[in-house]
Amino acid sequence: MSASSTKTSVAAISILASGSMAVAKFVVGIAIGSLALISEALHSSIDLVATIITWAVVRVSDQPADAEHHYGHGKFESVSALGIIALLYVLAGGILVQAYSHLREGAPPPSISAIPFIVLVLDIGVNLWRARALHRAARDTKSQALAADALHFASDVMGSAAVIVGLVLAGLGFWWGDAAAAIAVAVMIALLGLRMARETVETLLDRAPEGALEKATTAIEAVPGVVDVERLRVRMVGATHFIDAFVTVPRTYPIDRVEDIKRRAQQAVTKALGDADLTFTAVPVARDNESVRERIMVIARNSGLAIHHVTVHDIGGKLIVGIDLEVDSDMALDAAHDIAHELERAIREDFGEDVEVDTHIEPLQPELPWGTDAEPDRVEAIKTALTGFADGGAIHDIHNVRVRNSDAGEIVNFHCRAEPSMSVIKVHESVDEIERKLRRAFPTVKRVISHAEPTRA
Image 1 (cartoon, rainbow, N blue to C red):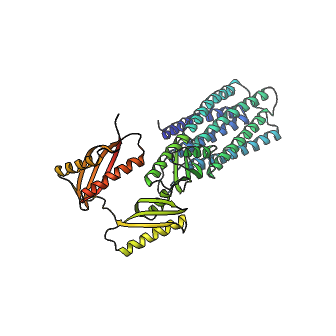
Image 2: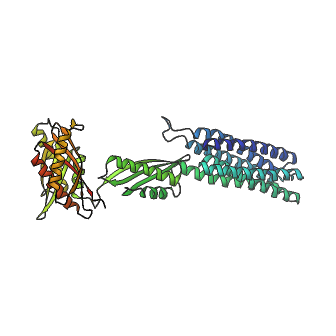
Image 3: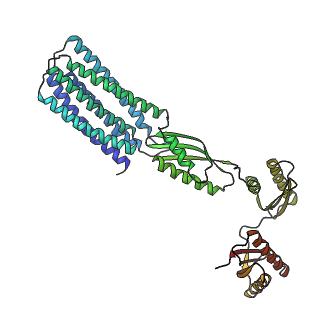
């Protein structure tokens, strides 16, 4: 059963229970002339009105957000709770005034019989069941309106117990016992109303639920990729935790990685708090372990530029940077030079004016360049050459050779093997030597892409 149907069904059952018990106590109270029992009947009548309001409100509060209520309709429950609290205080005031009148005028005690005690014991049993059912439903659905209704029925239990004590005192000859019990009922109503008012006002003032801030922060900080949680705010609207989080993430992360962090953060707070709606603001920050290349890539990406082959050297304490900058192949040289100059300026702003930056401008490769597979004999000739260049060296087992023709020239891809313990730099240097020999032997080869694999055992 959904949360909405659970709240509605529990509230509907409470209406029937409230109505029947209110009528029974009211009839018996008038019959025996007990102010305390009539007061308790009036209290139950207010509970009946409150339950009807609750039943109507929970049907509205579960409606989804719309164009006018961006956070949903959950606070309708808080507003209804304030209305119910007002009714309780009106009732408590009326009971106190009437009880004072009885005490001042010395009103005769009520007629004592078994009937009022039977009604009150039955009322206590029904109210205990209702309060427990409502409390469980309010806890499961985080409904403030149902929680308020549960408190009403809990107060009915205490009120009925006070009436029993008052009737016993009256039966023992203490004429003021009934009025004293009525006063006790009024005081309990007022105290419960005060508790409800505090919780409801705190919700309307967007007070963060106790422990929610710590739970949400811990959940988000545990997400891989999160550097820190700078600021986090939580408020409740109905049963939903609305969370605004400002989270720092490495500025070197691509957008899709940041989006994955957001998705994982939403899952984490939902697991920690239940119903949660997270607004995640990613704040990119530089980490202490960023390399020079990473910082330069961030500068270029922030400028919307495509760069590659970034080389960095430290010569005599001076930073030397080389960059390949890709621009539109049809762009005029002066325009391309201006772009390169701005990139170099941005790098100097980040690293200092003494950094030496040289930018190689080259045409941007098309996203889907034209190409065709080379003839088989051409592929075989290039494979034979590659195998010969590798013969006797650290690189061996040339395989999976592919050759494609493109507008810019031939593109060669091949796989090769090397000893598993060989360092990456050694492998790279050995493969580079083979690639240079291939381009010298086949001048039409524009690019060579190699993939080195460890030798199989």
